[in-house]
Image (cartoon, rainbow, N blue to C red; front, side):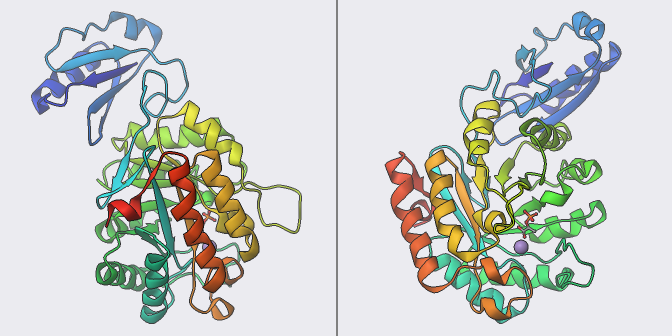
Length: 343
Ligand code: PEP
Ligand code: MN
């Protein structure tokens, strides 16, 4: 069961509802979104039957939701949600380009990448400081130093930053610098990490696990929501297939389907899906056509020397083509580009 509180509900109103739930042997999880506070109730059917919260102060409505994910479900949630990252919207009315280097390597490389991203129309800057690498011998990212470089560059070019956090013990430090926290594909079911997102006060980008079903992905998002953070953007980044010439398969069905199952925004990452530059723009176009609320791509000023994922990084003509696609296609689908809104 989900209890929706009025925007004007006081902390005391919320406390009274929680006390009522706990007095009836239920468990309450409070999620404070930008627009509303929601209290998720966990308990047996017997417990839910005995609750009588409708008349309590501040309660707008109570809803029984049949989907196994409740707070992120589209059930009883007529309008899809817009999430704001440092003021930049990601949602159904806009289209948001997120771009930047796969990994932060040096201050100059990050600054050049950020300028390329901005020229292409990006309103958010991505960049990995803590890198989840398949090989333990590969570049693992600059860690804390990378975080600082990314934050300084973001400030200099005027773009809020998105960066990955890999471990629950590092959440506070990353949240201090980042405008949005990214959970990578390999950590989609790291439940301790998901729960640690609850108290950060920062929006989260949750990438789909390499072999995750839509339901598993949404259950992972529910872990974050249940711990108090409803500002979640889902990112389809390709799933494991059997074709060796592409790294992963971008699942465009995920965009259309998950937008029906959940009210959360859904974006695509064609760079990590394809793993090769020449497919990034066609896949970005496919994502936009399927209704994605944004696209995230890797860029690099010198991909041939990149320490991570150089083969997929856009530059030059391919980046111009991407810029053209994100400027022209979303308006055909009734969206305003976030770049336009940002002026
Ligand atoms: C990334 O975006 O830098 C990344 C590592 O992506 P994924 O988790 O999708 O592989
Ligand atoms: Mn990468």
